Image (cartoon, rainbow, N blue to C red; front, side):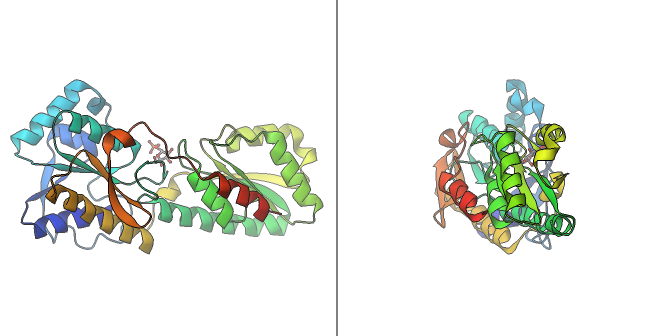
Length: 308
Ligand code: F6P
């Protein structure tokens, strides 16, 4: 997100605009926590994970009273437009603000990659690489000790991270919310891998799958004998959201941040800036909000062929 913040700030300054950073997301918008930004204040942040502005889930902004307070703060401080960098929750807030008549532009940023309006969102590549590194490391133990691993990755209700990490990490099974897999199928996949002489097996499980890693582990506890391998579970959790962003993420964030300012120069608001087929495009927020981007079922089929 920092590369996007930097791009928004510097591209706006290049337009001759004054820029303020809203601290702690919508909570800061309600509290009027706006601090001036300069080209220098966004220096040295490209390589930092997270956001220098801070972020917060704000239940208050979900109420009309909270949103009216935010609007009052924006008007009182003579702000002309807001750029909202974030995922589904943030863009739902952006849409609400836009519906109240305030000019808003969203920037697609979430590790879940569930936002319609962008093929890929800021943070996905970094999170994917972190998950992949963990899977590669877990495979070392798995191979040496002839174990099967259940690796749970984040992604909320979207299986994108799990699917991609599973393909790139050579998983024997991938469990995602979009395509139901029963635990017996995973037992069978592990058993087959064992009988084919594999020294390890790995299932990448999306946290939002019907059977997450814990539920699967509970099931396997009872049916352990049929798997062949000894079983271990690893939930990657928040480590996926930290660390230095990859080159891909920095470039994407820089382009999307610049795209948000370009949209503002065209007076195009109430939209999300994303990347579709390598081009920076805008999609109306009312098409984005409430919709879930589907995963590509062909990739799921490919994963099955590749794990033989
Ligand atoms: O939306 C990003 C995400 O990391 C999801 O993958 C995860 O389910 C969720 O946020 C965790 O949210 P919180 O930080 O509120 O625990």
